[in-house]
Length: 118
Image (cartoon, rainbow, N blue to C red; front, side, top):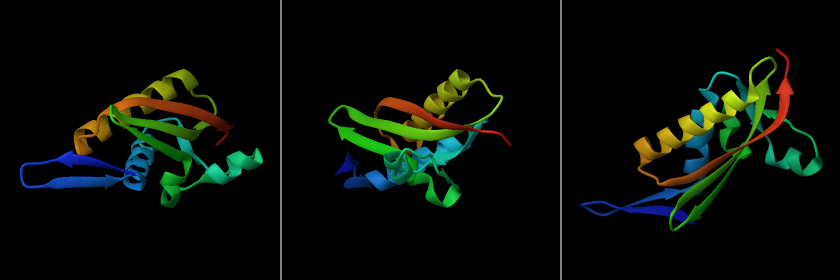
């Protein structure tokens, strides 16, 4: 399923993968985020740290008529306040999706899968 936006000259269609990649890139800009956690590893009970080339793999996007629901699985840096990092991720992802893509965002759910000591 893709998000469709009606513009003056036609329709813009944005795929879920694009939303996931943009969300992942926005989350990586937040201080305290080390990386995304792999969806495959989550099924196995492990949290594999993914680099910048795999930003979409730690993000689930659900599109509803009211807007997008983003579930992000992240790895946080040891020593940071997890609640503040999560709040900053939510604010950053919401801002980027609404400002750059014009997407209505219902929720950004942050799931901290691991803490990494650097």
